[in-house]
Structures are given as structure tokens and as C-alpha cells.
Image (cartoon, rainbow, N blue to C red; front, side, top):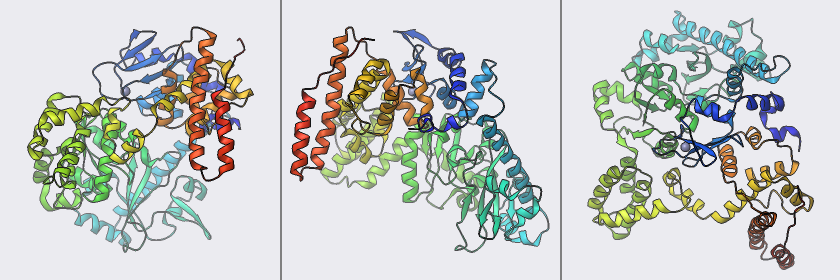
Length: 599
Ligand SMILES: [Zn+2]
């Protein structure tokens, strides 16, 4: 395995020494303490989790191992991951913030960090020029932009609003932008995502489209959306900039720069560019748009960072929109936001609704937005025929599942009496069902909110096996002689331990390249991976004797290897010879014994 695959993408930009140095200078307890009030308890520090809403502290910070882990929501990572998450920054900016905090100079020349930062600033500059060109094109009495101006006029979009959002127009020609920015090389424009390379050279990406510049919180133009003005079969209705050094669809919200200024407790989330503009036009300036992607936790964090405590989802009312809404609910809750749902029945989107019925009617609609619970209960009601006994039972069980995730008993009670009334099932029976679900071990609150199919699949997983995998990896990272013994005797493979993060962690444990467990977090990219690592590190056990350690190692190893073997036997059951071989392997696993060297 090359060092790059191990270290992840950031090793292309930084020396691991630099990352280590910044981490050593920034003790995680000190850094976290400036965001969260921490109290020492049983060798760790505890506080209220900044990443989910809670009343008693389940957020732990470990000074010895320099990582944090929330027993409530599972968030975890090292000091860099913490800053990334809490400040909503990417890796380079988080590293920079921590370096600045301790007056450490990040190496200036020859490193990727500067290259990467420079690429982003260059893209921002080019985007600004392009935005100006599109804006001017729409403004001028250019006959080419007639249709665009007409379109906006018909939608009631005033020049003030055009200025506020910097709306523009990209002419139909293949090279309007290329010609208008002669000082910028086509390659640079391509890097910024504004032109494409074709057989006959470069050409404009956005043509005959209304342009919506996407502006981030630092007022940089990070990308563009374009609405087609041609015929419907003339390309997609909306297109976005491709992902660039500066633009990631899943990490921005359209209109956020304005919505933030509204300083509202509530943020309304809609789907399209035109919806955002229309909402702002009618005075709902606390509106943002997701750019044709599912709502991610990064989006939820951006909403949270505006200071709002409630997200109002106003997505399309069709089946896809309802699915997207159901998926978005747990994502928003996980970030500690209250969630309300607004459904439009008399129009297909907010833009249409507002132009037909106006702001006053929308306001009364807004006042009736449903809680996410009421929204889901209503969906269940449509799904099941509660005139039959089976329908009532299924309906009640589905409701119990989402109610089990609530913490407020008052809230639960209110819904329970509603459901009892609708189904004629006694409130105490419904409450029993809820308690049963809430008490099911190892099932977290977000988990209960997931759509049912994935719940069933996950519940089928063997918790004991998962614990053995986590426990073993924890042991291997804290007892190097154990990792050495497994590796030298080829006792375990990445596949046997379950592949994925577990497999990669096993390979890392075998290469013995990790100085501090907190380095592990720099080797993985996603939140899920960071959480998995924190969960593993948080589950540390002390072994009083060498024999106890050997026994624990052996037990976990056997459990993992036997599970793997059973799975293989199941798959190969028609091949008698293989089954025989596997049977004899099984015997030797059961008889396995491990003796560790001292040290
Ligand atoms: Zn948490």
C-alpha cells in the first residue's frame, strides 16, 4: 500500500509532520473547552455535545489519546475533525485556524496547501469576472437578452432583486464568455468550471441561460446555476457548475449569504433557484435552496450556523419530494434543529404558489407547518387502511417507532392520544410499544428515525460481532505486540474483519505507522469513518494481566473468524470439497491459542 492511500487525500497537500506538529501544539481539551464547558469525569472530560441537542452531557474528550467521542450522536474525531465540524471548515482551513491559534507558520512554499488555497482564490476571482459579464449582459439593451429579461419580468422579478442576487444572462453563442475574458486562459476558465473542452477547442458551459451566481458566506462567487431559456429538449432545465476547488454542491446553500442576515429562528429550505428568489421577493428572506442534491449534514450545519433553531422543509410535494423530506428529517434533527414540514397543495412550487396567492396566504400556510412527527403520522395514515385490524396495528407500530425517538413525554402523550383516538387502540398499549422500541439496546435515536427498510436490515446485524471487531481493533492499536502477533502469523485479514473501515484500520494496525491513535482520523475522509474510529477508540479496556489480554484477544479473534467462516460456508454450501476444507479450518480456529511476547 502506498503512503498516499494510507494517508488519504490531504497527504498530497501537507507533510504528515506538519499535521502532527499542529495537533501536538493544540491540545484537544483546550481547543474543545473554548466551545464546550468541560468537566473532568473518570479520566475523561465531559460536556454537552455541540453537534446534537442534549440535556445531560454525553460528549467526551480524551486527553491521553487526543480525540473526542459523543456517546449520544456518535460524532467523533481528533482536534482537526472537531474544528472542521464545529466551524464548518474544510481540512485546509481547519488546519490553518489551529496553526494560527498557536502562532505556528504553516510551511509556505512547495506545499500543496498553498497550491490548493491559491487554486481556490484564483477560481473565486475568475468567477467574479464571469458573474460581472453575465450580469452586464442581462442589463444592457442587448436584444439577445430580451427573452431573459421578459422571463424575469413575467415572474415579477424587479431590477432591485436582480441586483440583490446578481442575476445574469449567458448568451446563446458558444464563445461569449471566452471572448469577453480574453485575459484569462481557456484552461483557467475550464478549471473554474465555466468552459468545457470539446473536439474543436473550448466552449462556454452556460449558454442561453439565466445565471444565478452562488455566493458563500465570505461573499465569494463559488459557482453558478443556469436556467435554460431554450426549448425543453435543449439540455437540462437547470445546470450547475461542476465541482471545483471552490464549489461542492453538498456544501453550500443558495441564498445563504442573504438568509443569514435575516437573523431568524427559522430557516425555510426550498428546492430551486427561482423558489429562493421568489421567496425573498415576497419578504421571506430566511429562505435557502439545496442545489439539486439530497440534504446532507453539511447543509444542516450551515442552517444551524445562521443561528436558527428550526428548519422548515418545503420540498416538492411529489413522491420524490416526500422521499427527500423523509431523508432530510433525521439529518436536521441530528444537528440539533427542530424540523417542520410545509406542503403545498395548490401549486407545484413556492414560486408558483406566491405568484398565484401572494405573501399573506403563504404566511398563514407557514403558521400551519406540521411538526415532522405530525407529517409522518399523516403519511402512515394514508399508507395503512385503519378500518382493518391489521392496518391499525401496522399504523400504530410505525407511529410508535418515530415517537420512541422523542424525549419530551408531553409531546409523546399528545401524539399518543391522537393515535389512540384514530385507531381505538388503548393509549397504554401504544405507550408499551414505544417503550419497547426505545429500550432496544444499541439502537440510537437517529436510527429509529431512519426509513423502515434500513432499520430492519441494520437490526439484523450481529451486535456481538460488531463489538468484537471494534474491541479487537482497539486492542491492536493499544497493544502493538498483539498486532505484531496477528500479522506475523497471518491470523486475520481485512476481509475477515468485515472490510470497509474495519479492514483499512486492520491494515494500518499491521503497518505500525501510527504514532498516536489520533493520527488515524487524518487518514479517513468522511464523517461516518471518523465516527467509526472514535467509537472504536472510545471503547478502551484495561487488562490486569497478560493472560487476560491474551484471552480477550483470542476470544474476539475467534468470534470474528468464525462469523466469516459461517458466511463462507453458507455461500459455498453446494461445493462439498470447499465445505470440507472450511470445516477443518473451523476446527483449528476453535482450538486457536495465542501467546504474546513481552513488550
Ligand atoms: Zn452528540
